[in-house]
Image (cartoon, rainbow, N blue to C red; front, side, top):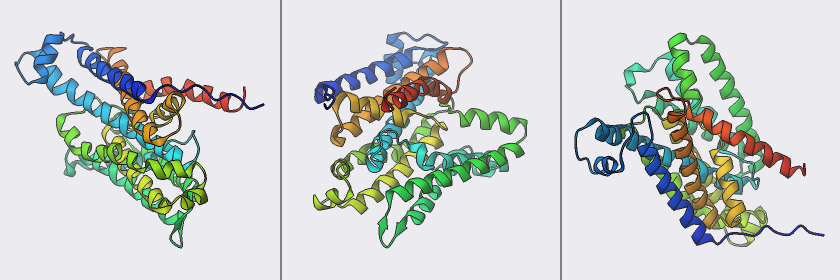
Length: 336
């Protein structure tokens, strides 16, 4: 006897509720912190009014950090939803295909080998370059005769990611104490240094994945039936594969460049949205983006308030939240 399908929530009200929770979470994040900010001060800070400490904290520190957390979370979750559709595996994650490891290698290389001549943007630019190079190598390995084999792409990503992690370990071994301090905090993820200039640098690349990934929903829906079925339905499957991988490299590379390595967002958010509203990528991808933004804003708020005035790495907080969820998911899939 077949198990009954779980009851789905209405799509429009669910997405609206997630958007409302995101807006509320952003307001709470702007008010919370070692320096308490009144709602009136927040409103004035939004419009650039006043020059008191509370205004400056909102305007120069908290707002760019909240915007960065929103964009990074939405980009990682949207990419995760698309990659899960591409690989037809709900346990797929942006870090699974090695893009995050490649970005981390680029950033660590600049930290350890020196990149001061490039200015304070050297680490984000190196991380972004590492993500793009990793994606290009995977694509070259998995492409034969104009076709890209998804299984080989996944295996290539795992192998290249392992190599990148090994090289990162070598560079970590060569780092001095100051470099290790910077490297460790960055590798665990942090939005502490997010400023408006950083938002302006990475926002176009993050928005590329957030805005363009939902346009691939129909071929991803077709791929749920199998590659041959998607081709018979008239979808340009090879083009869709390339688009998902390129957009994934761009958005994940920019996210790692902006905030370091933040795990589980691309796994948890798509799966929760899939449980709520179903597997249609037309709604799954944008819904995952909204929930991913909400989870990242929430995790970052906890990271800077739990041990204030000190701060926890956001990747550590997200791992503590997402790790148990991942274990429960694995146990449920194995019928435990």
